[in-house]
Image 1 (cartoon, rainbow, N blue to C red):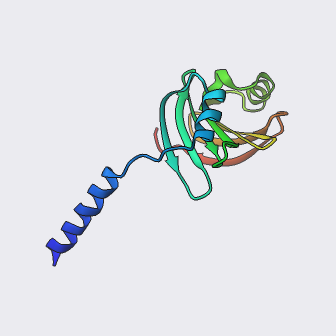
Image 2: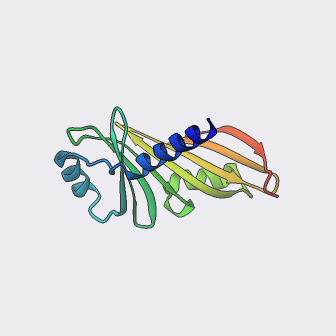
Image 3: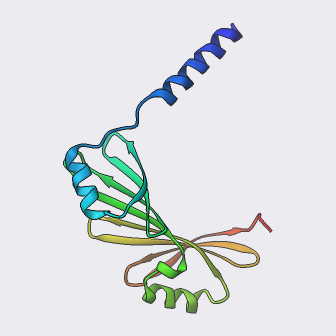
Length: 147
């Protein structure tokens, strides 16, 4: 019986590996190339409501989600301190003095831009949420386990 389960698991794994990568529609490809002309290392992933491109552009990791008709639904960008808007960076430096900005996740969906900023100091990790105007709130605080 163990051999049957092992064989079934191996077969399922081989099918998953052998399945072709999703192909975006021509409309999606056209819209993607117009918006992200210098994208590199592009991989496509298909979900029930959208197709997503994961790629790098200007040393930044980005995810772009499209509807089947080529409409850009959402972008998610991952970057560091140097790419934060200056108004947000100035407020962070003042409000969270002495804490290092470890990473930023920027999400643009419709007309809304949100930032999730991860900070750390010698003892804790902090998650701060901000809007484009620099209105921020502390969302989470955790004891660091990596020290």
